[in-house]
Image (cartoon, rainbow, N blue to C red):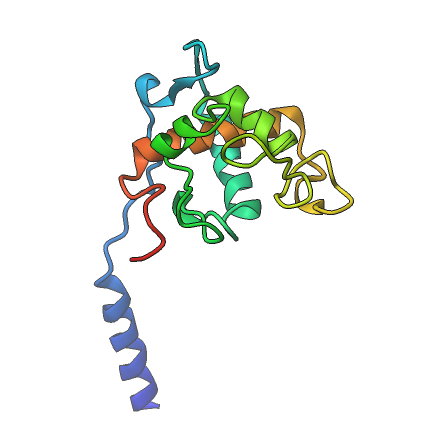
Amino acid sequence: MKRFILMAIAAIFFFLQFPIHNASALELTEETRTVPLTEEGETTTLSSEQITNGQRLFIRECTQCHLQGKTKTNNNVSLGLEDLSLAEPPRDNVLGLVDYLKYPTSYDGEDDYTELHVNVSRPDIYPELRDFTEDDLYDVSGYILVAPKLDSYWGGSIYF
């Protein structure tokens, strides 16, 4: 019994060593939340809820192949802003990424990838995005464009 009491006291002292703080969410500035909407340079400012939803959906459905914006299946093309801007058509804007999630094409825009890349137009092949709404596509696309502002390693090489 004496040993049990000493163990309980030791456990209490052990747990009191951990600092307990209130959790605080990262507050994104308006500048961070503002991303290109179109190729022509129009911009949009996403809400924190949109970014949170986009991040949740990205983690749930996209990180299998695009962990931290990298592309496991093709190390030469990432979700980094530079790579997205060099795609044909450019995918460094929200509407360009939404279009890609509906009708994916090769990096040069020549080949149809609807049977090779997850998309909403082929739920028979890719059920992952079957339940995505237009708002979900917008939110994921916005998150992909905000993520490089939050993580300097976003879209880098898969070779660590």
